[in-house]
Length: 179
Ligand SMILES: CC(C)(COP(=O)(O)OP(=O)(O)OC[C@H]1O[C@@H](n2cnc3c(N)ncnc32)[C@H](O)[C@@H]1OP(=O)(O)O)[C@@H](O)C(=O)NCCC(=O)NCCS
Image 1 (cartoon, protein in one colour):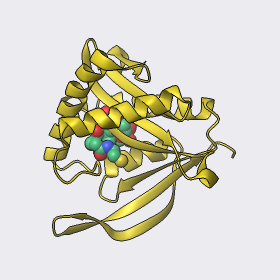
Image 2 (cartoon, helix red, strand yellow):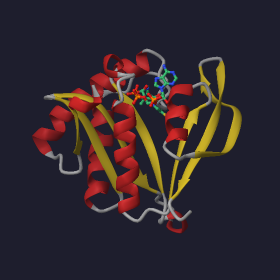
Image 3 (tube, helix red, strand yellow):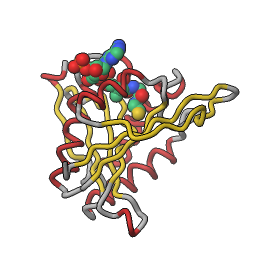
């Protein structure tokens, strides 16, 4: 499918386009989280929460402090992801890749790889020095994807991620563009 998928820059979304993007992103993220996806939420996020998140990432993108990328199959949003520059003054050359997500019925077709590769390229082009991410230890699919795109694991917090009574490792990965 990825051949029919177009990756768009979401940095320009404001007002009405932000509202319709929020609806589509909320549907994807809500469904994934309800199905147990490791995206940092225990319960599906609310629409206002997704709206605020997208607004923040789009604004950061316009300021050169982030990138929001959207995967479309025709007119349908099938995936999204973003990176944000670290806020701490001593970490400003670096950024964190977050919430790469593909709608469940569009998974396994290359969309996640394309989306992540475009995000990595945009971070490199923006002059980011180190791109980090973290993933839940049981998220083999995502960890394999990141490894094949050049990320390497630099640490792990055992049994750190809490989902009700269950505990999972938190795995830290990095891609150093200075290498
Ligand atoms: C992780 C995720 C973004 C991958 O997107 P996707 O579109 O399904 O992935 P792709 O089809 O592009 O496959 C990318 C790679 O993932 C790995 N992968 C995909 N399906 C897999 C499977 N069933 N088992 C193991 N690895 C798999 C492979 O390395 C694959 O690359 P390859 O096909 O070249 O071998 C997607 O599964 C998702 O949205 N998951 C839920 C949210 C989530 O966990 N996000 C990551 C948070 S850290």
